[in-house]
Length: 170
Image (cartoon, rainbow, N blue to C red; front, side, top):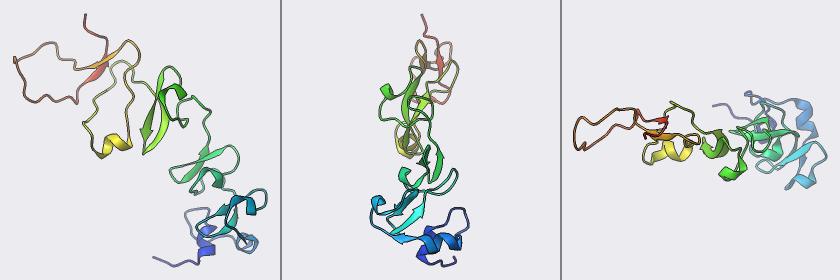
């Protein structure tokens, strides 16, 4: 793995660790964002004032990204308006009626509730469920298996991977 001086690595905007020499020369030391000029942020790891990141560039926090962008999964992305699918949330009421607040790669986002015939099986615990959550079925639907009836009076283990959002049985 190649070594790069901290000031070069801190300024890296793309997958290439080599930075533009003008940015290295313009870098000022800092410990907080307020120590940096307009259009710059304080990279607290390297203690340097650096230009705000543009869409698709690497980041560690929202404040590293330019206006209208958020830091998600290590890169600056366009900020989704509150309540819409893909917007950050803390609880279900932060999202629209047809959505819920669920984890995606560990971060909470508004996701659509599951539609008719979509798979709704959720495994019992484990890493997958704590990182990526599934919303419940849409209003008026229930999560159930499509099997018409039982073949046995008692089934010790039932495979729930075929459960889907369906209309309730009457």
